[in-house]
Amino acid sequence: MAKAMARHILVNTKEEAEAIKTRLEKGDPFDKLARKYSTCPSGKKGGDLGEVRPGQLVKSIDNVIFKKPVRMIHGPVKSQFGYHLVHVFFRD
Image 1 (tube, helix red, strand yellow):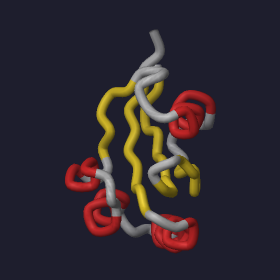
Image 2 (cartoon, one colour):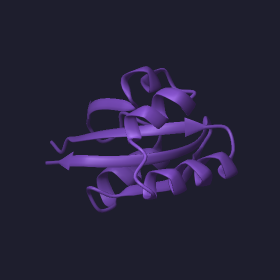
Image 3 (cartoon, one colour):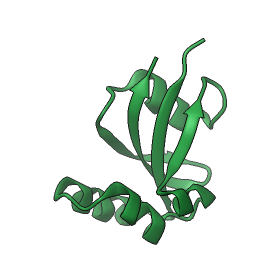
Image 4 (cartoon, one colour):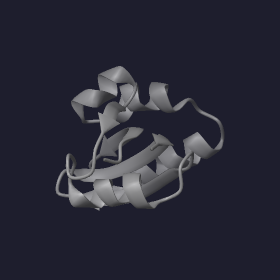
């Protein structure tokens, strides 16, 4: 079964997500921005979602993790929880 390692930043608005993505593109560390801005409990761990398998997360995030290129920051991705920036750093 497929598995991946990913991290994310969850915020309430698309504008917030876009502003954070701009900072990431300029070199700000993902983990520090996750700790500061993410509304998900994983933010305390730098946004680390740990090892995930298909179907464990909401469909919109699952699609990014298992169908989009690895080692890129994807988003903003909308879910019922808000807007995510997703970084997949390993997929098997």
